[in-house]
Length: 309
Length: 290
Image 1 (tube, rainbow over the protein chains, first blue to last red):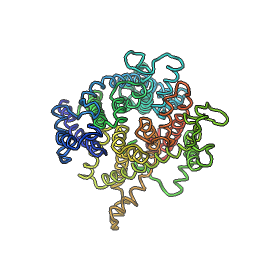
Image 2: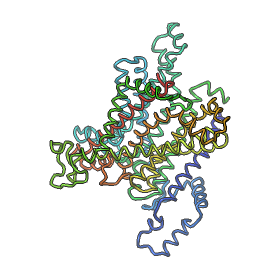
Image 3: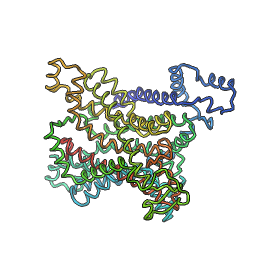
């Protein structure tokens, strides 16, 4: 098992290097002179030249990329904001807890609702409940996150005044963003649970379990769900990753001081190091979540575990 | 959708059969109807829109929906219905061109990787894995931020960001077709690799490409609207649904209709494409049918 974990962690290295390369290249290709953006229109030629020399902007592309990676790995330094001149890494780390809190509350909500609804939908296949669930799931997938957020604000904070429309300090401020962002993963998890359960409940061992007189509860929750869980865990992992990305829009709607809003504000001010730093950070987080999911498989599924003894 | 499915689309009888089966699925037919309607709107926008989408009339600003302005007017007194009708042009254009970019690049890389295998396959697919490890909306944001705002840059950003998904699917199909007799036969008579891929292999993996593309247009439109919403996509005064929604947000307390209608337009379009895509998948990919 340990061998497997180590192997998987090492396989992340080329992926992360590749992501860093893409992000760095995009930043490099961005039109506009960084020296000019930082120092302003009035800066003298000498000041610009000095800035370029100091920041290594005159070095060849690959040297610059090498320095970028070296600094990122050794000092956790992924550049400075053009606007505030603060370290991008610091800005992201101070924003990340809010994003994580939002993503976690969404995953929890989506899992707690999605798995039971998916199971019910599968055991009552083709009933009214199943049809309504499937219809709502596809509607949930088609709702633009930003529109849903705006509508929820309209209903619950402008009209009904139940929940605040912005801020991120009390539990009440968490309700609307979670409702907004959890809808999509809820739909995906429900659909996956349903189809995975449908596949499993037709297997012989379920018939065996029923034949030996096991209660329906145990048949469904232990025998069936236990085996249907692998694809469900996969989607949950993937959804968690896309939640980190989806937070970009949700956070800017609800003024949540997270990584997504940091990036959107940076886009508006053309503060590209922050934008690219945010993309890099979320991609790294996404890769780690995927790694966790793979390790979780091995834990859930004895067949996979056995391969890596 | 798994990569190793390689259903066949045969001759015209096959197409007719597909149509017959698709017709039995009411949701898919509803989706198709909306999509056709949307294409009709896009083509005839100049004729059927009651007003010009850019026509400002400040005296008439912030009119609630009425007989003259079915969806009301915006802060410049522009007719929202006309802007939504014109917006269908932008959305369809973005959806189709972005997916076109993904299919062309994804198809090329996927086909080369699947056909030649070995080291080339490894190299291409590891590259795709790296792209896949960046969530597609973020990749689109990063690319759009580098290219700058604008319609064409946005299409490129959305198109590139979803390329790896197509490459994976096409590689899977090509891989399962590569060893079949008709490919060996083509090789035996001396066809070139390009000809084998273009003439013999790709037409046989059209089914998964069609399904993925239909669903892909939906997600491309959604991503593009999201980019416009945060100011990275289409700039005003172009009537793009995401940008209209974003613009209406400021006035949500008093003029909610300004955000409701563009959002509804996006949702109905996405819903229709998803219904159609799901229906096509049931018909074209028998292995996935449950």
